[in-house]
Image (tube, rainbow, N blue to C red; front, side, top):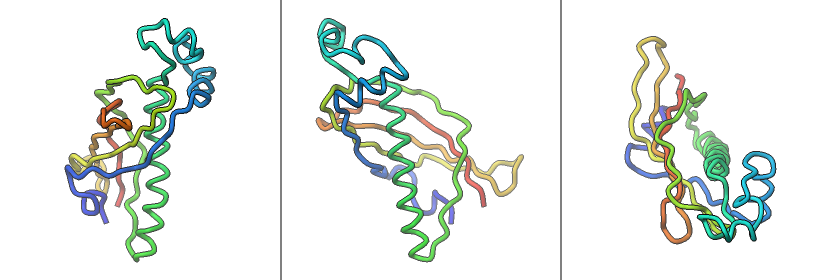
Length: 155
């Protein structure tokens, strides 16, 4: 069964929630984005953000973590119902990545994916290009990250 048949266009799927603790923000920043406002709460107070906040890359990577966790559970659920899960991946890329608001220490971000379109690839019979809108929303209802993504699907 195709992804678009299971999850119709324009219906958001809730993927999961990530809590951004100060420790997780600092740990990520030490490895991947060592800017003062991600590493040190005191230094962050004097930045444009006025507080310790997560790297935009961390907020984006957290979407992928939630999606993979969601898909693993969803695939098991489908199999248990006698439905063959769609074969997804890899992704040829994304566009329009926007970090709309800072994610501060203590924030909870809930991630979503919404199917927008699916089309057959003429160059690869049995392969489809799925397009999704992906978002992260904080505990106040503010969208903090958004991007469009493509992912291949195979018969």
